[in-house]
Image (cartoon, rainbow, N blue to C red; front, side, top):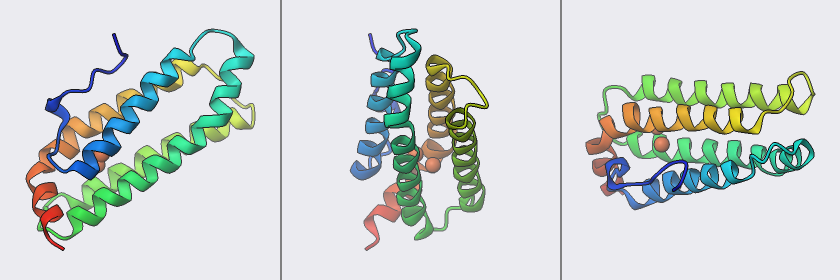
Length: 139
Ligand SMILES: [Fe+2]
Ligand SMILES: [Fe+2]
């Protein structure tokens, strides 16, 4: 069984967004497989992937904001601030680990991202579903 099971309940019915969410879930499911407890291996995996994940997330949030901005979505600013908050948290966590201020615990990192991302999708993205669909149709 996967760490995160992807299902239709997460779908926004916008293929571009759904495939980005699915990619994030796949990355987290892959990361969990690298939580072996072998410190050097975990660190290597982290160094090779964490920045890429943050960049991908940044790009994902921009995609969402571009679509939502075309609509009258009432929570646009709140949603955008929430994106910013998640990125700041992940950048801080990454910096602390890269600079060895905090020891890497890959399982903790993975769980942390999972919590933040799935909660965000459920609370913010899904509640804006009709605006995502509407915005996606506006050229
Ligand atoms: Fe999202
Ligand atoms: Fe979002």
